[in-house]
Image (cartoon, one colour):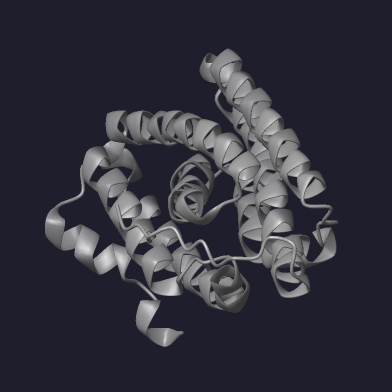
Length: 231
């Protein structure tokens, strides 16, 4: 995993840091809320897995509360309007896919893209976080691997039937990730997180997930870079 060295010169109480943190903190809070809602919707679509998916949703709600506490610890009010706009593209695509009964697309958006996005962000944030947020985030990232695993296992078991829809969903949604990373790059840098490290860690996590499902190395190289050169 790509990591950054701890940068002790970060001033967690500076106005620049707090302003950036108000947006980054809001993004992780909204991301956990999106996941909570999405897992409830997936539970409706996968009745044989309802209990497990509701359990994952409850875990995401705990994560949200943990990140809300991180903001309070720094006396920062999260910019939730910014965060909702930040997730608008993935949110709408998930809602549209769910309304059409496109389960595979919903799983790719939530269980692969959003979880890998979260894992990469948390991995890069932990070394540069304040002590309170580091403890919270270390606990959260362990859970996120479990959430990623659910989607991987279902899609692996249904790979041949899902492959074409997965590739189409990847084409539609992965370019949004690069746009999101670009949109937040300046704020992330104020927190000690470099865009290049975030991109690298996301591509590793996403590529590993695609491999575990059943895609070839050649498929993964093509899919995981889709849209990267356009932003």
